[in-house]
Length: 162
Image (cartoon, rainbow, N blue to C red; front, side, top):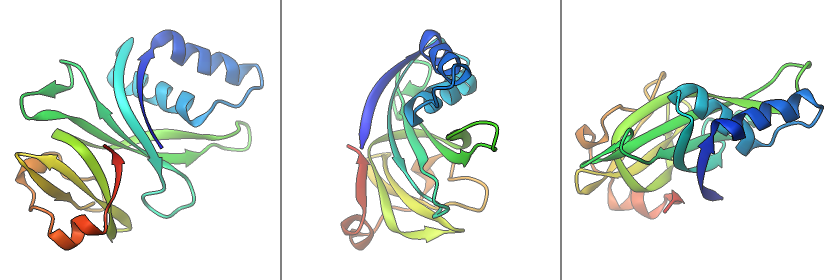
């Protein structure tokens, strides 16, 4: 369910080329394109997992970026990308970054409860497991400032990025 990837512009361009040739891009290819556009980087390392976080029937993506541009002493950037079904002219889905959180370390968990229609996330930050609740627009940008997850919340959560 999760994977480490290194995105290059060549990979992103390949995904676009395959789409133009009638081959619908895979979710991984679409994610690579979305990440290359968001980060504006030709070479990007990350871990990712797909899960429908908002119960709309389309898989969303959790991405933990790596490397000196995205990580510091407190952790790395976590992106949440909303999966979107493309129109009738294109097949498949695409991804839009809806949330960016800093100082995040694995494991990244998805809780059983939800806020504003999105499942709660539990991440390691500032030496503790922190609960991230969606506020209607995004997850909190700084997990270290959030409350710690309770033992019950941790017991019911699924690890997506170990």
